[in-house]
Image (cartoon, rainbow, N blue to C red; front, side, top):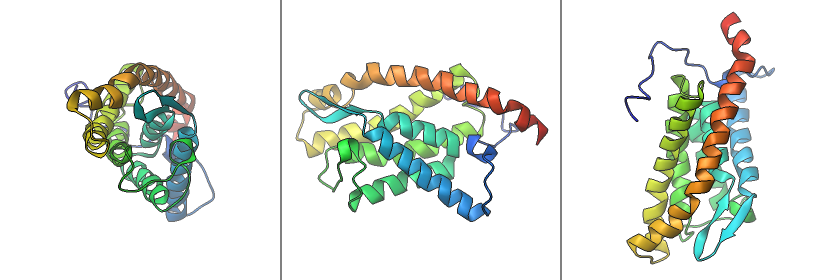
Length: 203
């Protein structure tokens, strides 16, 4: 995967958010994008379907995280997910199903993974990884790997699950849904770039 995603370092480093024209200064614009990304992830988290036997539901949350990372880039993507995490921990009801969190929340590991995934996906997007379906799919896979690498071990610890049970309830049951989200992103992001391609070339 690493060699496939080793993109041209001379590529246009802009991400989709850089093409949004708003009458704001650079700092206010960045703040608006970060807050907007966190809000979008919070909205996506409200699409929540319980999974029998697992404290982790199927949600639109991860799809929101990966889209925000790709659209905002590494720094703003990570900042947006950090805001989402911290605001939820102090009481904003925008975790899955309108919940808030604490150190004892079983899904906290996934939420921490969102920050890292936002940074990774954003960095890859800055190198053009969201401009073709194949590269976008690999980028989304990489983001999901980071989320699960943080989420599954914490789930095992917080819910007192065995390694096999935590893998089943924290990863395996979500793979089909993740595949569908990745396919959707692989169509959505390159299409968005095609729509703004003329503007990108003209700037």
